[in-house]
Image (cartoon, rainbow, N blue to C red; front, side):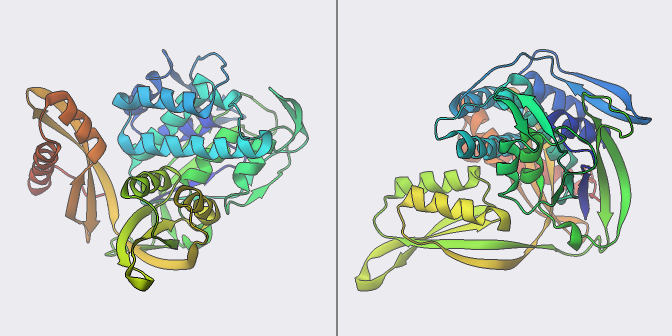
Length: 403
């Protein structure tokens, strides 16, 4: 199993995350294409920070203040240039930031530094980079926050910033002030690490280092390299049938909500970071028809998702079954090149692996839906054609095992 280990021994910021992932082998062309959908000329250079060679990403963008809706509009406009899973992850990152900003500043908070085009491009770049590495999990080592004060759009504030603290308090990430003054972990960096995290570092066990990368921050500080390190690791037990993790299961019964509202709610739960969400028809007391709504949640997100379930469904109680153990297949994403109605397309297909072989695959729906809308071909026909092409590549040995 391939995992990424983030080692933010000098904090984290959006550009550092993207640079470290690029240095670790992420698809540079895909990352720059995603970033260029927001900023005109992103650049990637190699720099040195206190003797360590690192990758520095610059967006060359100007500042801006935006609402969440305006940020989401920018992401929607970038959709044709960003892999669908990466775009969905970017949306969840900004939902995390917005929740933190609202907790600090009130319900009508604007994004400040994190609403600028450079922050949007950094988030899209980081999420795309992680997507292209196709790892099975991400582990975050203790995050160094810094200490003292820093200056931003709201003046001078204590480190960590209120938004960074609000983001991290919704996670199980371990933090430390570290030895160095200043803001080492930004709200964007904290939100990316929180969204990426899927594995407790204590559960990794032994591993082999397959690659490593360093992303540089803007400052070139003395005595400590201003870099974020990422390690691509092969974990002990590679080649097992299925890997494992632990989630919480949230559920509630509703008998006074329409199907349209439930469909909208399920979509909201996924956008907010649920691993999965579903609604099952049931019969309640006195023969009343109802729905059992279930949400599979990362443990650190359960309270937030339960609150969202109550708000969207109007339910008065959400049951939480904690620590549900699950088996999960190793998965990668294959970009399939195919011609649909005379149009050359590159569409993502998710592959499920067991014992070194693909046992299931599924084309991603949203990119296929977009092509169907552009060409007038039924979406089921597009999905079928893409999956047939993917199976052909698997059978002819064109798809390499992740190990």
